Length: 502
Image (cartoon, rainbow, N blue to C red; front, side, top):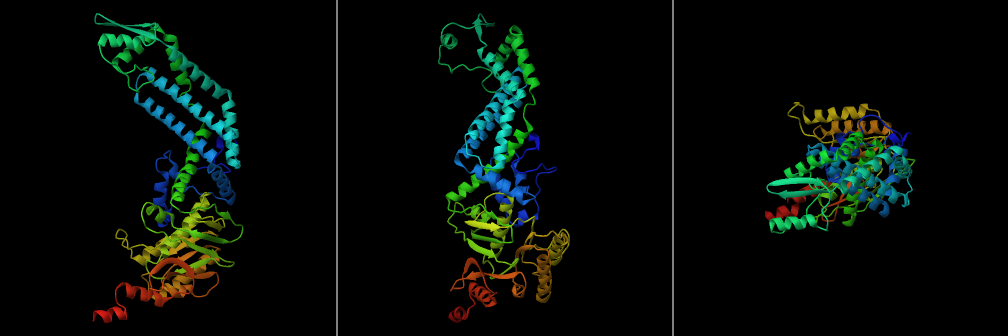
């Protein structure tokens, strides 16, 4: 692979749009998580959270890179690099504010020098770090080749030499009899210019600044000085404009791509560290070659983020798909944590697929080529469709895709259909996806769907002895009585409550 095609996200170059966001992002509340993740990182990193690797090898490739990013020395070097590149961006912004050719050229040269310094410091730091991933090792090699390239050396040397000559440029401003004279040269003595101004004005002055190194805009006096100096020393100004023009497009594409892609990893690491400090666990998932899938202390990261600085308690759950098991059918009382658990399963698959750590104490799962979700919808006023028709319209493409091995999440399907019809349709949906070798979870109030059948495991949301939701999900057959008792108790309709009131 040519180094121009190198990526920290892929082992092989890909064509087309790097990322697209589908229905499951909204269903799993991942849109909220991604909004939090991108924060102030900028650089268009949002698209990378919609860019899922297409092979298990690429997931492992990313995992190794992220393991390097988490190392303290590597992380510190990358954060310093981001800060250096922030300075480059600031200079580019200042350059865009000015209209004078000379001033624009000076800002451009400063931008080039800062850009070169950022990558030289990064290269030095990373070569001294204990990198173990194929991706980071390859990047350091590529960066070293770029820094040794004759074109890069010419860029750096010409910009630095010219800036040094500009720093050494001195001139004298003489104000006498309502005239200002500008001449090349240097006033003898230390601080002579400031002292002269102090005597002439009779007051304290701020330290004089070089017009090339101050704010982007120049005052009329500075502008006049530049114009006069350009006439007196045309060769240096001509060379400066020439160098700026020659190197106007100086960025190396592979480095520009690195700058965006490394922020993808750093943005997730920053959020992970914030959550770890609040006691939420994270783990590097183990990629299984079989259908083994399990996790310990799994939680809904979107819910956890919403409660990060509150007293709200987040309940974690354990689960495992044992040999031959493909689908969980989850039943239980309303507000018992069923949908939250289903979302946490989808988030686990998603972040593992991205090659990042997952919100759990430990996790093991296979590579899933796709994630598909179907969450309950309301009737559409715009289309005139009833709720059942809206659900079937969304379900049809999922069932027609015939994508084997997909992770499927279905939440409260066929709630408006008659119980018998909902049971029959639900069983057909399960049979279809199980036949494709898919794994997933089906959240429902239809207890019959949890009946014993090949590949299906019954889970239920648990209540405590007082019939109050614990938000714990455990294996077990549906308990309609518990659900009913929960509702009756909530609305004050138990025998004891009615007897007391009557």
